[in-house]
Structure formats: C-alpha cells, structure tokens
Image 1 (tube, rainbow, N blue to C red):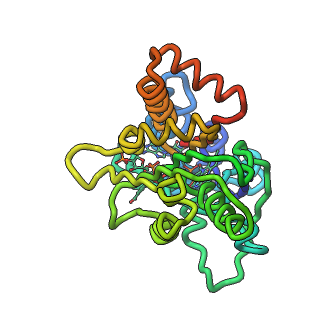
Image 2 (cartoon, rainbow, N blue to C red):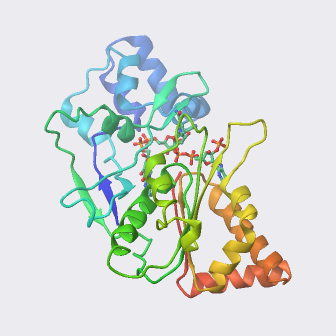
Length: 304
Ligand SMILES: Cc1cc2nc3c(=O)[nH]c(=O)nc-3n(C[C@H](O)[C@H](O)[C@H](O)COP(=O)(O)OP(=O)(O)OC[C@H]3O[C@@H](n4cnc5c(N)ncnc54)[C@H](O)[C@@H]3O)c2cc1C
Ligand SMILES: NC(=O)c1ccc[n+]([C@@H]2O[C@H](COP(=O)([O-])OP(=O)(O)OC[C@H]3O[C@@H](n4cnc5c(N)ncnc54)[C@H](OP(=O)(O)O)[C@@H]3O)[C@@H](O)[C@H]2O)c1
C-alpha cells in the first residue's frame, strides 16, 4: 500500500496573462518577450530549468497584481505525491509511518531548491495537531505470505516498504514458522543516513527474521565511506551463492527505491548471479529472471 498527499503548489504557465496585469512597463515587456516565440529559449531557462513557481515569478515581477480568480485559473492543479507505507499495521495499530527524504538540489543558476511536499512534511511540528490530507492506494508490491522466502533490495528510502515486511514477519515468527528474508540496504554513510539501523541489526541476530542462522541476512552498502562507490549490487554479488540458493527454494524478489538507474543495475546483478551459480549463459539467465517476473515473483517499485 502507498499513500498520496495533496498540497497547494504551483508552476508558471501563462506569461501573457501575467503581462496583462503588470503595471511596470519593463516587467510587462519582459513577460511579453517570454511569451513570444523569440523568448522561448530564455523562458525555458528561466522557468523549466529553474523550476520556478508562480509565487517566485510574482516576487520577480512585483508590479503584477493578479486578481485571485485569475491566479486560480492560471495555476495547474498540483499533482499528488505517493509515499510507501513503512510500518506494519499489526505492529503499529491505527498508525501509518512514512520514510521521507527531503529532496533538495541546486539549480543551474545556483539557487537552492527543496522538494515541495517532502519539505512541507519535514517542517510539520509533531507537537501540533497537523492536518495532512491523504489518500490510500493499493501499491504495486503484493503482501508476501509468511511461507515465502524473500530477497529484498531497498537502498535509501527504498527500505520503506520493507520495514513493514520485516516487522510483519517478525510478529508472524512468534506464532508460526516463517521463511527467511535476505535484505540488501544501501546508503551514503554509516554515520549519516543508515535508516532504521537498530531495527535491521536487531532482527539480524539471535535467530531473528533477518539472521543468517535462519537462512536470511542483512547486508548494507555504504556508498561514500570509501573512495570507490559500493552499492547494493556489490553486496549482492558477495552473497551470490546464498542468493541463488534462496531463489532455487522459490524466493520472491522485491526491489524499491528512488534512484532511476538502481532497478536496472540490480536486475543485471541478479542475472549475473543466476548465470554464475546456475552455470548458464547470460541469455538464459535473462530469460530465467523474466520467467520469475511473469510468475509474479519479481517486483519493482521505483521513483525518482
Ligand atoms: C509509488 C511511489 C512510492 C514512493 N515512496 C516514497 C517514499 O517512501 N519515500 C520518499 O521519500 N519518496 C517516495 N516517493 C517519491 C515522492 O512521491 C515524491 O516524489 C518525493 O517526495 C518528492 O516530492 P516533493 O514534493 O518533495 O518534490 P517536488 O517539489 O515534486 O520536486 C521533485 C522534483 O524536483 C526535481 N529534482 C529533484 N532533484 C533534482 C536535481 N538534483 N536536479 C534537478 N531537478 C531535481 C525533479 O524534477 C523532481 O520531479 C514515492 C513515489 C512513488 C511514485
Ligand atoms: N541531503 C542529504 O543528506 C541526502 C542524503 C541522501 C539522499 N538525499 C536525496 O534524497 C532523495 C532520495 O534519497 P534516498 O534516501 O532514497 O537515496 P538515494 O538517492 O536513492 O540513494 C540511496 C543509496 O543508493 C545509492 N545509489 C545511487 N545510485 C545507485 C545505483 N545505480 N544502484 C544502486 N545504488 C545506488 C546511493 O549512492 P550515491 O548517492 O553515493 O551514489 C545511496 O547510497 C534523493 O533526491 C537524494 O538526492 C539527500
């Protein structure tokens, strides 16, 4: 399951409408230029590349006094944002936990920008009664039954859905026999963004659901703690034999995360592992993973 959030956000669309309401001549000229075919490239640099919001444009053109009813028509409706639910309902009754990274970047003109929704969420005061408008949608990662062995790959906020999976299976293991989980997590630094460190490590020992003693395992790749990047796929290749053993036992693979390239790279790592351990050509390994996908045992939920 994942959750969608609606907020009031805006982006520039119609410079000609704005120019109509500009009272300063130089501002009207500039806005007309942006709206003209000759100004298209400059408009692209100013608006799309910089991801300026209407509010920022109004700050740049202070003489524009646009009536509210025009402003509302000009601004496109805000798109909703989805977040994976990162808690198990059985472990946290009447609660929904999210794992949100505040998106931030520097524009070509060196302006610091923050993601609208993630920064809004981060700024909420937990002490206040906050109203967060939200909807629930069924996600693309099906809930695994306790008897299904799992190989989970979730770097960064990709660990969100798997926190719920691990919590759920830990509870199930108190009353029934459960299949093992191997979980590959990745983050930048051990001291910076090692999300839910205590949770994973506690389940990785004392016969926990992530323990090697139970046939599972927890493996973490710190990408920036050394000169060479280390990613989840490097850790997977170190566990090649154990991954293959679990796949051969009928394990399902779940991959989640925010990096655009990560799912492709991780899929290539799975293909390499199948090729090496099953002693088949890379073509056969590719078909093996495709067959796993067709059988409903290879799931990817990625965002960027
Ligand atoms: C199914 C699904 C599940 C998701 N689960 C989670 C989750 O569990 N946790 C989580 O944190 N997020 C999750 N996301 C992502 C989330 O929905 C939002 O996209 C994210 O939080 C950013 O939203 P925002 O409003 O903060 O940023 P926005 O204001 O929407 O800004 C983000 C935009 O900024 C731009 N941008 C970002 N970085 C750069 C850059 N370096 N250079 C140039 N432009 C850039 C991009 O164009 C991007 O579209 C999920 C998405 C989906 C589809
Ligand atoms: N301000 C901060 O401190 C901070 C920290 C983390 C993330 N963020 C931002 O928050 C957003 C979401 O972050 P997130 O937590 O979900 O992290 P993310 O950006 O998905 O990164 C998580 C981990 O995956 C690694 N990674 C990158 N490309 C990969 C690939 N192709 N294959 C496997 N692993 C790969 C990253 O390494 P590298 O990043 O070293 O390449 C990092 O160690 C991103 O926009 C990110 O820029 C900010």
